[in-house]
Image 1 (cartoon, rainbow, N blue to C red):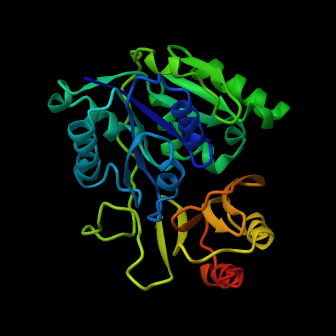
Image 2 (cartoon, rainbow, N blue to C red; image 1 turned 135 degrees about the vertical axis):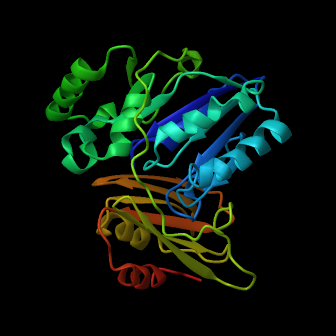
Length: 325
């Protein structure tokens, strides 16, 4: 049986960073796998996790739990049967609802295969101060489903967010654990905590996505001889636009970082080729984190998400001007 953990969290809470930390500190004699789902179709998290040493399966387009869970079951079966991992980490989109996923994982068909352990919800406590996030049904249900809440980005907390977390915990903390972390630095030992007897989750909040029902189950790729391409998606009150560029395209480093910093959106995430190698870009609100390495990725991918529609053509024109090749 594969020890399995669901790791949830709203947009920008730090799920992927937490998973990267867990993978970097996993037992050396274990094989781990990650099933990752994103709201957009570009596959940023897949690019971030590509060199982590884990088996990886992506489900793009926010559709892990749509169509009776078929996309999730295809990815899940592939990892369990072909990879036979010791542990599986499942990262749904930040706009995902946990109930359908937990229903699938606890279905009789998976009883011989899956040893379901604690569900972790990664939380940026400042989100508790944002009425739009706080009233989002998926955000509320992610916290309700958690056996363990990881209050991430402790280094960015404010007196107001600290008090909001204390107030929330006083009302909702019974029966679960709370841990604090900075940059997703959580111990793999937390994954072996047992599931709690939490109250049943409500039925899923209504969610829909703009992609067709015949959409593929792989992240966006480039047709032969096409230098770049873009993809948009929307649903649950959020809009996303992502771009992928071929391996021969590099971007001006300073200009790219300024573009990411100033883009009028709430979320920016990307892995981009620059003259120095690669830059990883992760921005939530005004928090911008960058990391450079002298190893270039096979292509460039970047995605923007916002809670209102944006002039993607204007942002695209500015991005294209930053190409060096």
